[in-house]
Length: 612
Image (cartoon, rainbow, N blue to C red; front, top):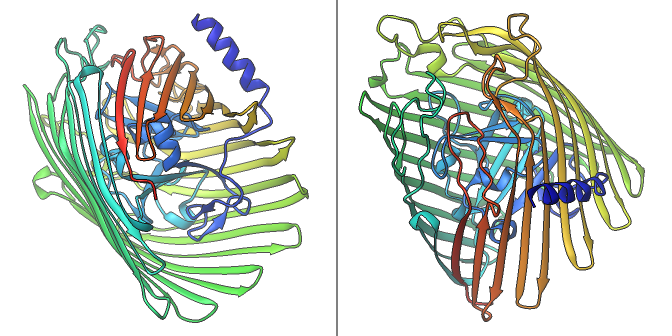
């Protein structure tokens, strides 16, 4: 049966290889240029997950929501609330920057945000921009940007409530109120989810540094309590002020060195937007992000408290109807708790950036440049250039080139020695990249489609040497192809993607020519949705090719296929019942060697929201 489903899904996807599931033409995209554009104006490769998508597919995590998008590979160490990494277009897990409502999400000492704790029930939409974005967003943007928007109210005051339960004694409650008018908006919501989980790691490998290297046959539970607030007001002079806060705290259980982790994540900020004239708008943002974790185990206890403060000032100047100039300044201050034992516990950076968006007839372009002065790594200049032209009313050609960089993480630089042996390297240089991309976007016979090819070269890639000390010893070249499509056939909405990547180690050492670890070389997604009156059925087929768990490519992780089904029934205008069956055929697979993934599981929910 699995082979039949796999063959059918591949055949269906191949019939759609001249298509793509991207945003509707009139959808507003703000991440790709730090200013609002419609999808057909954006020159970058962008995908959007809407609130409707989150509800329709009953996603529970950010990783699950984006896992089927082009260029995305997810590595998860044991289910809900466990360590999760994003490899976008074959780059490293800390090469994708996560933005929340326009501000950087706080990262841990490794320089990576803990996306496994972001409460998806508080999210209104997700924008994923592929390709280097350091010219606008600074360090950490070699693979791209993921921007997450919390819920923003509109219309009359509307409450909502959802309760659900499922496999592993999973329970979830979501509540909130929202509303607004032309000059005011507000949204307050909260949620709680807990699960007994499953055994994340069974220690079967019996090999040091593979999996948890422990046999602890217990369930590894998870709980997360969260809340979100977003309010704003528009004054009579068209000035706007807004505030947002996203908070989550809870506990996650593990197997191995640590057994439990108590976590807290909180990002909050305020925004001011003022129209200085008909052609000049000023935007200012002040924000703070915090990550705290207390990790406890049979052998050790560790504490971490990371804080990032950020200030941004942006000027948008409409030179004429076809040209928009953006000038801006960013300040960032990173701190880690002094009790960590790091020799340095803080650093800051100042950056100025400029961007010019323009159109000439059927041609459009984007030019961006940024200079970032880091307290530790001096000055780095990055830039992007993108061009697009309408070949016809239904076909557009895009081309781009961009440079990006990633500053070494605090843990790579200053982690204290382990029993006298070094575990960090204060002489590390930033990782640097160049990316070339060519794409076609079209619409034919009711099919929206796109095709993109790209090549990324990363220099001074940070890797661990034989003694597990980070060194600038690697170089990598990543080549890729992405095909995406969407259409409707006989009332069934279809969308799909196929991604192929060749992430090659070019270090010149013993691993030269190998595939970079934990990147799936091929992924395929096929989604289908059909509404039948008050009933709707949604399916997702996801196929992943092989990946390797280590740089030497001696630990191969085989490919897999999963099928998810979601059924929804509208009981009345205010109530909807939904049931989701994940991993329908109980596929046994891994995304990280030695760590288990969930088998077939079911989740049922009742959602209440009064009809307007």
